[in-house]
Length: 310
Image 1 (cartoon, helix red, strand yellow):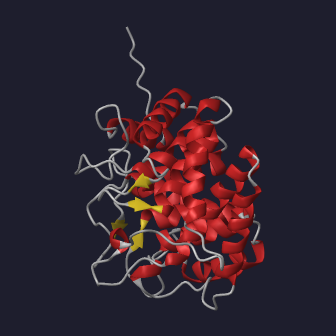
Image 2 (cartoon, rainbow, N blue to C red; image 1 turned 90 degrees about the horizontal axis):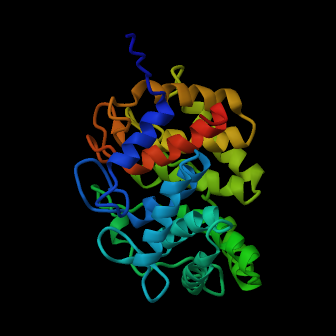
Image 3 (cartoon, helix red, strand yellow; image 1 turned 180 degrees about the vertical axis):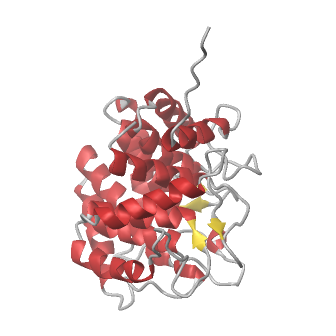
Protein backbone atom coordinates (compact mmCIF):
# COMPACT_ATOMS: atom_id res chain seq x y z
CA UNK A 1 0.00 0.00 0.00
CA UNK A 2 1.38 3.43 -0.93
CA UNK A 3 1.11 6.16 1.67
CA UNK A 4 0.83 9.71 0.38
CA UNK A 5 2.23 12.36 2.69
CA UNK A 6 0.82 15.85 2.33
CA UNK A 7 3.34 18.58 3.01
CA UNK A 8 1.49 21.42 4.69
CA UNK A 9 1.80 24.82 3.08
CA UNK A 10 2.70 27.93 5.06
CA UNK A 11 -0.95 28.86 5.66
CA UNK A 12 -1.86 25.43 6.97
CA UNK A 13 1.17 25.45 9.26
CA UNK A 14 0.28 28.92 10.55
CA UNK A 15 -3.28 27.85 11.33
CA UNK A 16 -2.07 24.63 12.96
CA UNK A 17 0.14 26.75 15.26
CA UNK A 18 -2.88 28.82 16.31
CA UNK A 19 -4.92 25.71 17.07
CA UNK A 20 -2.09 24.14 19.04
CA UNK A 21 -1.70 27.27 21.16
CA UNK A 22 -5.32 27.64 22.10
CA UNK A 23 -5.39 27.44 25.89
CA UNK A 24 -7.88 24.99 27.39
CA UNK A 25 -10.49 25.62 24.68
CA UNK A 26 -10.46 29.32 25.52
CA UNK A 27 -8.38 31.98 23.77
CA UNK A 28 -5.00 32.01 22.03
CA UNK A 29 -1.75 32.24 23.99
CA UNK A 30 0.48 35.30 23.75
CA UNK A 31 3.38 33.12 22.60
CA UNK A 32 4.63 29.53 22.73
CA UNK A 33 6.29 29.86 26.14
CA UNK A 34 3.24 30.94 28.13
CA UNK A 35 -0.35 29.98 28.84
CA UNK A 36 -1.37 33.61 29.21
CA UNK A 37 -4.12 34.45 26.76
CA UNK A 38 -4.33 37.61 24.70
CA UNK A 39 -7.95 38.70 24.33
CA UNK A 40 -6.78 41.27 21.80
CA UNK A 41 -5.00 38.78 19.53
CA UNK A 42 -7.72 36.18 19.92
CA UNK A 43 -10.16 38.87 18.85
CA UNK A 44 -8.53 39.89 15.62
CA UNK A 45 -7.53 36.32 14.83
CA UNK A 46 -11.25 35.56 14.57
CA UNK A 47 -11.50 37.48 11.30
CA UNK A 48 -8.32 35.88 9.93
CA UNK A 49 -9.51 32.37 10.73
CA UNK A 50 -12.99 33.06 9.39
CA UNK A 51 -11.57 34.35 6.10
CA UNK A 52 -9.26 31.32 5.89
CA UNK A 53 -12.26 28.98 6.08
CA UNK A 54 -11.86 28.05 9.76
CA UNK A 55 -15.38 29.22 10.58
CA UNK A 56 -16.13 26.76 13.39
CA UNK A 57 -13.04 27.87 15.30
CA UNK A 58 -13.87 31.52 14.63
CA UNK A 59 -17.33 31.03 16.13
CA UNK A 60 -15.91 29.28 19.21
CA UNK A 61 -13.41 32.06 19.83
CA UNK A 62 -16.10 34.73 19.38
CA UNK A 63 -18.28 32.98 21.97
CA UNK A 64 -15.36 32.82 24.36
CA UNK A 65 -14.62 36.52 23.90
CA UNK A 66 -18.24 37.36 24.66
CA UNK A 67 -17.99 35.31 27.86
CA UNK A 68 -15.01 37.30 29.19
CA UNK A 69 -16.19 40.81 28.26
CA UNK A 70 -16.10 43.20 31.20
CA UNK A 71 -19.22 44.91 32.54
CA UNK A 72 -17.76 48.15 31.16
CA UNK A 73 -17.75 46.61 27.67
CA UNK A 74 -13.95 46.46 27.63
CA UNK A 75 -11.53 43.62 27.04
CA UNK A 76 -8.37 43.10 29.03
CA UNK A 77 -4.69 42.97 28.19
CA UNK A 78 -2.81 39.94 29.57
CA UNK A 79 -1.87 42.01 32.62
CA UNK A 80 -5.54 42.34 33.53
CA UNK A 81 -6.09 46.00 32.65
CA UNK A 82 -8.69 47.42 30.28
CA UNK A 83 -7.39 48.70 26.95
CA UNK A 84 -9.18 50.70 24.29
CA UNK A 85 -6.92 49.18 21.64
CA UNK A 86 -7.54 45.59 22.74
CA UNK A 87 -11.28 46.17 22.92
CA UNK A 88 -11.35 47.46 19.35
CA UNK A 89 -9.49 44.39 18.11
CA UNK A 90 -12.10 42.09 19.65
CA UNK A 91 -14.68 44.23 17.86
CA UNK A 92 -12.95 43.28 14.59
CA UNK A 93 -13.58 39.65 15.45
CA UNK A 94 -17.23 40.25 16.28
CA UNK A 95 -17.72 42.22 13.07
CA UNK A 96 -16.37 39.35 10.96
CA UNK A 97 -18.93 36.84 12.29
CA UNK A 98 -21.86 39.14 13.13
CA UNK A 99 -23.98 38.03 10.16
CA UNK A 100 -23.70 34.42 11.28
CA UNK A 101 -23.95 35.25 15.00
CA UNK A 102 -26.35 38.21 15.33
CA UNK A 103 -26.58 37.55 19.07
CA UNK A 104 -23.16 39.20 19.34
CA UNK A 105 -24.64 42.60 18.49
CA UNK A 106 -25.16 43.22 22.20
CA UNK A 107 -21.48 42.52 22.88
CA UNK A 108 -20.43 44.60 19.91
CA UNK A 109 -22.48 47.55 21.14
CA UNK A 110 -21.02 47.32 24.66
CA UNK A 111 -17.49 47.25 23.24
CA UNK A 112 -18.22 50.14 20.89
CA UNK A 113 -19.67 52.18 23.75
CA UNK A 114 -16.48 51.60 25.68
CA UNK A 115 -14.23 52.69 22.81
CA UNK A 116 -16.50 55.68 22.13
CA UNK A 117 -16.24 56.73 25.79
CA UNK A 118 -12.45 56.89 25.42
CA UNK A 119 -12.44 59.43 22.58
CA UNK A 120 -12.70 62.98 23.85
CA UNK A 121 -14.28 66.01 22.22
CA UNK A 122 -11.00 66.93 20.51
CA UNK A 123 -10.64 63.42 19.10
CA UNK A 124 -7.86 62.21 21.39
CA UNK A 125 -8.03 58.44 21.97
CA UNK A 126 -7.43 57.47 25.59
CA UNK A 127 -6.93 54.20 27.41
CA UNK A 128 -6.92 53.62 31.18
CA UNK A 129 -3.34 52.37 31.09
CA UNK A 130 -0.37 52.20 28.73
CA UNK A 131 1.78 50.06 31.03
CA UNK A 132 1.69 47.08 28.66
CA UNK A 133 3.16 49.29 25.93
CA UNK A 134 6.35 50.01 27.89
CA UNK A 135 9.54 48.80 26.24
CA UNK A 136 12.90 47.56 27.49
CA UNK A 137 14.53 50.94 26.92
CA UNK A 138 11.92 52.72 29.02
CA UNK A 139 10.07 54.21 26.05
CA UNK A 140 6.55 53.29 24.94
CA UNK A 141 4.93 52.15 21.74
CA UNK A 142 3.63 55.13 19.80
CA UNK A 143 0.06 56.02 20.63
CA UNK A 144 -0.39 56.53 16.89
CA UNK A 145 -1.15 52.83 16.62
CA UNK A 146 -4.54 53.76 18.12
CA UNK A 147 -5.40 54.62 14.52
CA UNK A 148 -6.13 50.89 14.31
CA UNK A 149 -9.03 51.44 16.72
CA UNK A 150 -11.04 53.55 14.29
CA UNK A 151 -12.11 51.18 11.49
CA UNK A 152 -13.96 48.77 13.81
CA UNK A 153 -15.70 51.69 15.52
CA UNK A 154 -16.87 53.07 12.19
CA UNK A 155 -18.18 49.69 11.03
CA UNK A 156 -19.87 49.01 14.34
CA UNK A 157 -21.62 52.34 13.84
CA UNK A 158 -22.83 51.28 10.40
CA UNK A 159 -24.07 47.87 11.54
CA UNK A 160 -25.69 49.11 14.74
CA UNK A 161 -27.04 52.34 13.29
CA UNK A 162 -25.10 54.50 15.74
CA UNK A 163 -23.77 57.59 14.01
CA UNK A 164 -22.10 58.76 17.20
CA UNK A 165 -19.48 56.01 16.77
CA UNK A 166 -18.76 57.13 13.23
CA UNK A 167 -18.50 60.79 14.20
CA UNK A 168 -16.16 59.96 17.09
CA UNK A 169 -13.88 57.95 14.80
CA UNK A 170 -13.85 60.78 12.24
CA UNK A 171 -13.00 63.23 15.01
CA UNK A 172 -10.15 60.98 16.16
CA UNK A 173 -8.80 60.63 12.63
CA UNK A 174 -8.79 64.40 12.24
CA UNK A 175 -6.90 64.67 15.55
CA UNK A 176 -4.26 62.20 14.39
CA UNK A 177 -3.89 64.01 11.08
CA UNK A 178 -3.08 67.24 12.89
CA UNK A 179 0.11 65.71 14.31
CA UNK A 180 3.18 66.65 12.24
CA UNK A 181 5.01 63.32 12.58
CA UNK A 182 2.11 60.89 12.11
CA UNK A 183 3.56 59.00 9.16
CA UNK A 184 7.25 59.19 10.05
CA UNK A 185 8.95 55.80 10.34
CA UNK A 186 11.16 56.80 13.23
CA UNK A 187 14.50 55.11 14.00
CA UNK A 188 13.34 53.98 17.43
CA UNK A 189 11.69 51.02 19.13
CA UNK A 190 8.47 52.94 19.77
CA UNK A 191 7.59 52.88 16.07
CA UNK A 192 8.96 49.42 15.32
CA UNK A 193 7.57 48.00 12.06
CA UNK A 194 4.83 46.22 14.03
CA UNK A 195 3.50 49.56 15.29
CA UNK A 196 4.22 51.36 12.03
CA UNK A 197 2.36 48.54 10.28
CA UNK A 198 -0.72 49.12 12.43
CA UNK A 199 -0.58 52.77 11.46
CA UNK A 200 -0.16 52.16 7.73
CA UNK A 201 -2.85 49.49 7.47
CA UNK A 202 -5.19 51.70 9.48
CA UNK A 203 -4.66 54.63 7.11
CA UNK A 204 -5.38 52.37 4.13
CA UNK A 205 -8.58 50.94 5.59
CA UNK A 206 -9.70 54.47 6.52
CA UNK A 207 -9.22 55.61 2.91
CA UNK A 208 -6.22 57.84 3.67
CA UNK A 209 -4.28 56.45 0.72
CA UNK A 210 -2.01 59.45 0.14
CA UNK A 211 -0.85 59.47 3.75
CA UNK A 212 -0.28 55.72 3.72
CA UNK A 213 1.72 55.93 0.49
CA UNK A 214 3.93 58.68 1.91
CA UNK A 215 4.56 56.63 5.03
CA UNK A 216 5.26 53.42 3.15
CA UNK A 217 7.85 55.10 0.92
CA UNK A 218 10.09 55.02 4.00
CA UNK A 219 9.66 51.27 4.37
CA UNK A 220 10.28 50.76 0.66
CA UNK A 221 13.53 52.71 0.94
CA UNK A 222 14.94 50.19 3.43
CA UNK A 223 13.43 46.94 2.13
CA UNK A 224 16.22 44.46 1.38
CA UNK A 225 16.63 42.45 -1.81
CA UNK A 226 15.45 39.32 0.01
CA UNK A 227 12.18 41.06 0.89
CA UNK A 228 12.97 41.73 4.53
CA UNK A 229 12.44 45.10 6.20
CA UNK A 230 14.52 46.29 9.18
CA UNK A 231 12.55 46.68 12.39
CA UNK A 232 13.01 50.43 12.01
CA UNK A 233 15.36 52.64 9.99
CA UNK A 234 18.91 51.87 11.04
CA UNK A 235 18.10 48.58 12.80
CA UNK A 236 20.13 45.49 11.94
CA UNK A 237 17.32 43.10 12.80
CA UNK A 238 13.74 42.47 11.70
CA UNK A 239 10.30 42.20 13.30
CA UNK A 240 8.32 39.45 11.59
CA UNK A 241 4.73 40.65 12.28
CA UNK A 242 5.77 44.15 11.20
CA UNK A 243 6.94 42.86 7.83
CA UNK A 244 3.59 41.13 7.29
CA UNK A 245 1.64 44.25 8.28
CA UNK A 246 3.60 46.57 6.01
CA UNK A 247 3.19 44.06 3.17
CA UNK A 248 -0.58 43.98 3.76
CA UNK A 249 -0.71 47.76 3.41
CA UNK A 250 1.44 47.60 0.26
CA UNK A 251 -0.77 44.95 -1.29
CA UNK A 252 -3.94 46.91 -0.58
CA UNK A 253 -2.38 49.97 -2.24
CA UNK A 254 -1.42 47.98 -5.34
CA UNK A 255 2.28 47.55 -4.49
CA UNK A 256 1.96 43.84 -5.20
CA UNK A 257 5.60 43.16 -6.06
CA UNK A 258 6.94 44.58 -2.80
CA UNK A 259 4.27 42.73 -0.85
CA UNK A 260 5.11 39.47 -2.62
CA UNK A 261 8.81 39.83 -1.82
CA UNK A 262 8.02 40.38 1.85
CA UNK A 263 5.64 37.41 1.79
CA UNK A 264 8.31 35.13 0.29
CA UNK A 265 10.76 36.21 2.96
CA UNK A 266 8.28 35.38 5.73
CA UNK A 267 7.66 31.94 4.23
CA UNK A 268 11.41 31.28 4.31
CA UNK A 269 11.79 32.19 7.98
CA UNK A 270 8.66 30.39 9.22
CA UNK A 271 9.65 27.97 11.97
CA UNK A 272 8.86 24.24 11.61
CA UNK A 273 6.23 24.80 14.32
CA UNK A 274 4.31 27.08 11.96
CA UNK A 275 5.10 30.20 13.99
CA UNK A 276 7.53 33.09 13.78
CA UNK A 277 9.80 34.61 16.37
CA UNK A 278 8.79 38.20 17.00
CA UNK A 279 12.24 39.37 15.97
CA UNK A 280 15.30 37.94 14.22
CA UNK A 281 18.89 39.08 13.86
CA UNK A 282 21.76 40.44 15.88
CA UNK A 283 20.65 42.61 18.81
CA UNK A 284 16.98 41.79 18.15
CA UNK A 285 15.08 43.65 20.87
CA UNK A 286 11.44 42.70 20.46
CA UNK A 287 10.50 39.49 22.28
CA UNK A 288 13.38 37.47 20.79
CA UNK A 289 12.90 33.70 20.89
CA UNK A 290 9.16 34.02 21.37
CA UNK A 291 6.74 32.88 18.67
CA UNK A 292 4.10 35.58 19.11
CA UNK A 293 0.55 34.78 18.08
CA UNK A 294 0.03 38.07 16.25
CA UNK A 295 2.71 37.11 13.74
CA UNK A 296 0.43 34.27 12.65
CA UNK A 297 -2.58 36.58 12.46
CA UNK A 298 -0.91 38.98 10.07
CA UNK A 299 0.74 36.24 8.03
CA UNK A 300 -2.64 34.58 7.50
CA UNK A 301 -4.08 37.90 6.35
CA UNK A 302 -1.15 38.44 3.99
CA UNK A 303 -1.32 34.91 2.63
CA UNK A 304 -4.99 35.34 1.75
CA UNK A 305 -4.21 38.56 -0.10
CA UNK A 306 -1.18 37.22 -2.01
CA UNK A 307 -2.40 33.70 -2.69
CA UNK A 308 -6.14 34.32 -2.63
CA UNK A 309 -6.98 31.52 -0.22
CA UNK A 310 -5.91 27.97 0.50
